[in-house]
Image 1 (cartoon, one colour):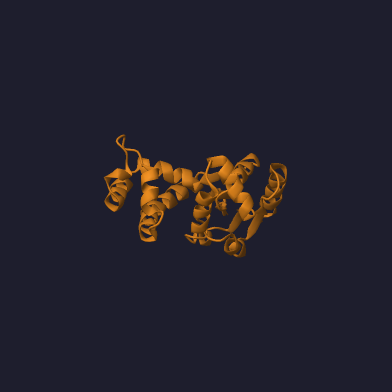
Image 2 (spheres, rainbow, N blue to C red; image 1 turned 90 degrees about the vertical axis):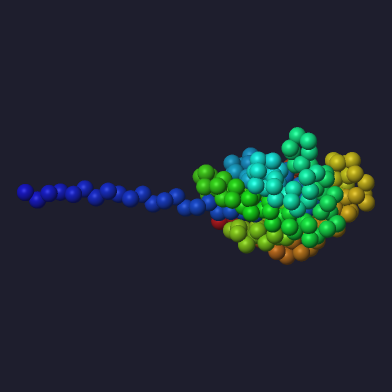
Length: 209
């Protein structure tokens, strides 16, 4: 009697999510757009927030950062001292680059682990340094949130109680908006109000194929 063999059906693996790099300069409204994206049902990885957590969680990073910037990089409670670190690297590009070389590989690994747990066809990576660190090359598309410089400055002055000169000093350290606009695949202009910003966000993200 001929033996019958049932063929086991192999299910196709789920395609990997497409990574959209979300960026914007200080006062652009990048974080607000990120929250809208979450409202529309897509996951967002907040690189800066995760970096803040990782520098406190990783003993290896703590050792390397202390070796680079000194024991004062962490306070008496063993927590990363952002103000001290900022004062060391703000006007020292070499130190800043070395610090980034310590932190960003750890953030990249953390992000890759996060992506594996996602099921949506799009995932968004929110990062201030998307173009500066060439992270856009690792993304399917880049999405820039931008606004006129005077509007961005006013927002930050109101939000952080800073002077115009303080805000201007930070903006001058960042890549010019015109350069980011040339590099971005998708652009959201945040010069008006939250309602229009949300509408633009919805239109842009659901147009990504």
